Image 1 (tube, rainbow, N blue to C red):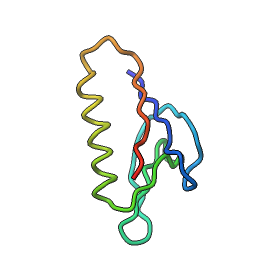
Image 2 (tube, rainbow, N blue to C red; image 1 turned 60 degrees about the vertical axis):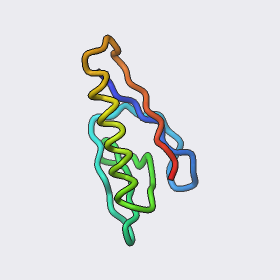
Image 3 (cartoon, one colour; image 1 turned 45 degrees about the horizontal axis):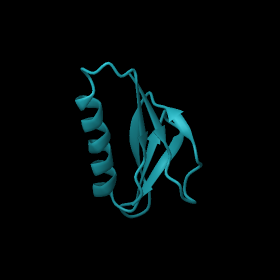
Length: 81
């Protein structure tokens, strides 16, 4: 199964659709967080770690719910703040 993510549409990230091999949180000033895929592509920006983790949970839940399906590709669009 392949996961493709579409980045947020805002002035913090470049608009892109990217095949994902890994996802990490990158911490900025205060509690602000970036969601980064493939070790270099920033695809989302959130004002709190709590919100960023909720989005990661949503992606994980989606992938779990589709593991037994015949889908080969999952597309996820990063939610806004």
